Length: 400
Image 1 (cartoon, rainbow, N blue to C red):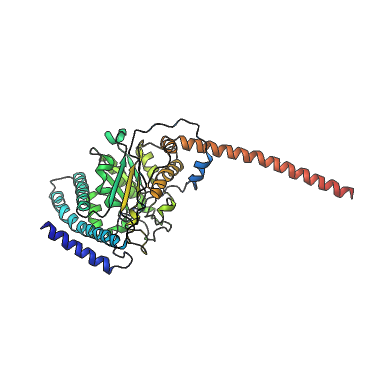
Image 2 (cartoon, rainbow, N blue to C red; image 1 turned 60 degrees about the horizontal axis):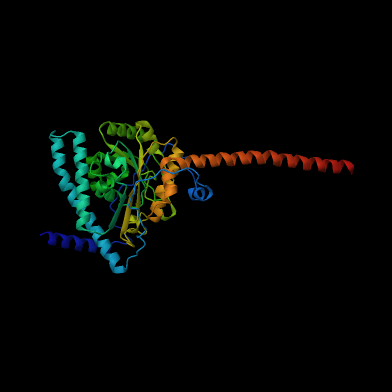
């Protein structure tokens, strides 16, 4: 019976693959237009790394399975077709599995046998279970999870704000499927902020509403274009976030606000709503980095489901902490997560350690202060030289 079901779904997936142009089959995924409280951002941290000389002793991270960039293996035409067929079959199976699995939970809540927080936590577990097992039935991706299992927050999870880059329309499915591997068996339930426009799709609307995910109202725009958000929706978003925190949920955000069409070039402009929520709730920010999913389902609709590779990686970074400034959070997120999203591997260990414990940011502030002092010293000297030259010219004219 299962073989018949798999065969039917695969055939339907192949038919859709042949009849869609440029990956036009679109099941909207979490675009998560995130709130912006400041536009502070450091423009080029790769140059910072080359200019700084590290003298501070970095903290030592526990041993981890460091990632290697093995996602460069490209697919042939037949392999690409098979991967695309499996991926579409996975999406179709989720369209069936989620409503069927969530309906009993809906009835229990409607009959008042379970509370609203219980409904949301159970629905999250159902969504994770469906995504995890459908990926096993339709293994279109080769998954690699890198986590420091000796990290204290992995062994004994504390209330946290989770931030992740956004590289594909598949992101939410992989976050659900790999959550246990990423955050451990003792992980806390999580609510993710998402773009309200995704509620136009009945499947995503069902999943997000049942899980109690938090909507943010933003204008529909092309991936890579500037975000246009509705400030009025932020008040409700903050209220919902505070309520979720009180109910024992962690909060998940995508600081880029939309899928990144060019992850190989680094991150899009970072919105620092995560910093605001962390400061408001006194919770540390934990970082997650995704790599490779855009090679299976690209956010650019002109590319779409043109599968060029099937390897993906997710990296969960240790030592979550509170940040002193929004700019510090944006700089750290871009330096660490942006590099992994582009290359599938970590920045050098000494830099990584210094970004994670805040030493790098303090060094950068010191460098900026020194640069300002040099400019301040140069300006009076230039003014003095200009004045001397003017005096000499005046004397020459008087002699004439």
